[in-house]
Length: 68
Image (tube, rainbow, N blue to C red):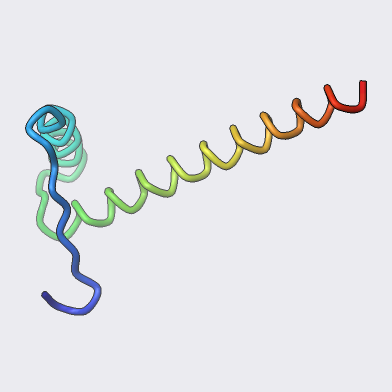
């Protein structure tokens, strides 16, 4: 494996999600090669931002209950 390269195993039950993702990338760019990895990273960034915001909101709510 090259530096910076990784492989991910996708379960059979999640293959439909992966195929939907690839289809959307293909519709957006007209190709997969050279853009699929970039779109995976963008999707991961969006997920992380969402999770971090959700956790911060939950923590803020929980701290508000302790003080009230």
